Length: 153
Image 1 (tube, rainbow, N blue to C red):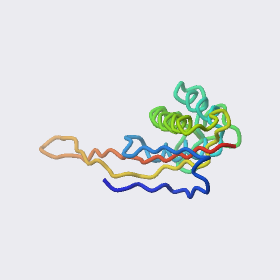
Image 2: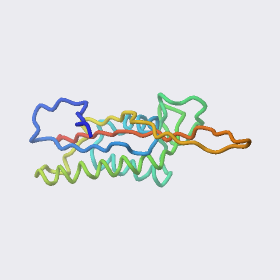
Image 3: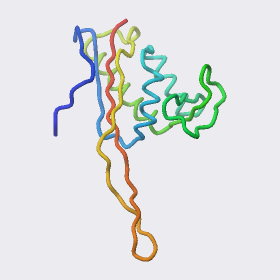
Image 4: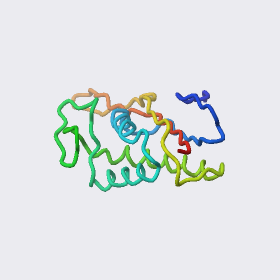
């Protein structure tokens, strides 16, 4: 397996903690919107936000991938949004891994802030569905890579 490099240059590694996940079976578009929403947030606030998205209490504003996306109540400054539950759960796991790494390094977890978060498209898992008269239709599964860097504020 190839070495995965972070899309972030760290000045001082002693004050940051990072975590990544590769080949997650979540939508890359949903991951991009979630990452854009929680970028720069404090750690506890971001975890609370993702838990509310999972419970479908708070929508994620879809700013880039918003063609034919309906409006949701509770969004300020942007009307279209969704509740990407599966992607929010996976990103929450990576965020908790980064928090555990920070705790292991001896950083103060109450002062942590998301310095960098990004998601990239991974390889597509090819599949197919059998159809009538001996035909087949492609049924592909996209994958996503997520990177998170936490830093003390």
